[in-house]
Image 1 (cartoon, rainbow, N blue to C red):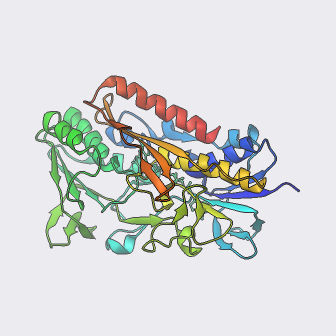
Image 2 (cartoon, rainbow, N blue to C red):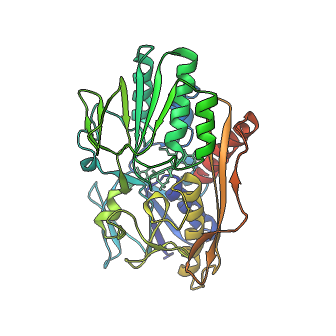
Image 3 (tube, rainbow, N blue to C red):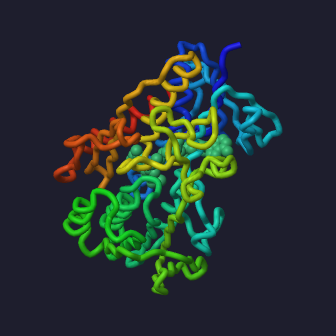
Length: 393
Ligand code: FAD
């Protein structure tokens, strides 16, 4: 029989890994992808749904091509546990799958207990996994009277998509500037400064959204009064909003913690960046937002895609008895829409450093935009279309 790779999670990391193991093994490795959702909903571009220039349907895709074009077996289910010794995973529906190598890409799990008042199905939304909550948050913004306040709490870094909250502030401000010009956007940031593209975002808030966006650093939300739509900081400050949107702190998806993979602060999974093999558990690889990153590596879809390719190549090599690539290089670009057209970016290149045994930013690589413009808007849309095609085949 051919070797068998099981992939947990059909997001940006897992779907890409499944596809590339099939392609790079020339069909000589069987791949099963386990994913509970019938459709893939992209977090990138989902802030545009809040701004009103996209609908969630524009960001929703099927898994058909992964199966039909690439021969990935797709199982619509959830993995409930991993048996490390027997090399099997248990499915919520009751079955088991045996693997030679397991690739885990479960994304994130919210730590609701660290933000009491927030709950998976509570009235205060995070909308930090694109889907029903994104649509519900847009409806709340539409229902809000002009003159109201939208407040967004940002968790301490590291969190999923460093520029994402600041892009969201721009999208809501863009909507308000067109339709509810007396309304306000209040950013309550647990961090001491804007985590990504700070000078650019601050300039845009001042020049484009002056009088709309207010940025408050050092506001670490520790409690939410859901009925009163109020965020409470660790210093006891209370901020009431008409629409409150709170992003709870998060960690690697639950299956990673359950299997003992999340060994860094009980949150993130330490990996060997040459193969993305777990530092703890043999024959298991972890990619995407769930990993403890190397310095200056964001938790992004672009990065998850790059992890997936290095991991897929290494898994194919290891299963064939070959040594994996000893010097991987990764890239990242994060685009942020500051209006419905104009975009800024940050880019970086990360290479293996044999002496320090980690990935480090290549000196002189990457950088940030000079200013927001619509040419970058076109690049951002092409980036989104390309990475989606690369992920889903
Ligand atoms: P995910 O894409 O979340 O996929 C995880 C998958 O695993 C899910 O489909 C889930 O259902 C499945 N899963 C979980 N547990 C199990 C289990 N036990 N069994 C089976 N399946 C399971 N990144 C960018 O690069 N550019 C952007 O412009 C950008 N914009 C963003 C905007 C917003 C508002 C947000 C929230 C994020 C944005 N990101 C962006 C970040 C990006 O979405 C994530 O970094 C990326 O999705 C991580 O990929 P992943 O595979 O780790 O997780």
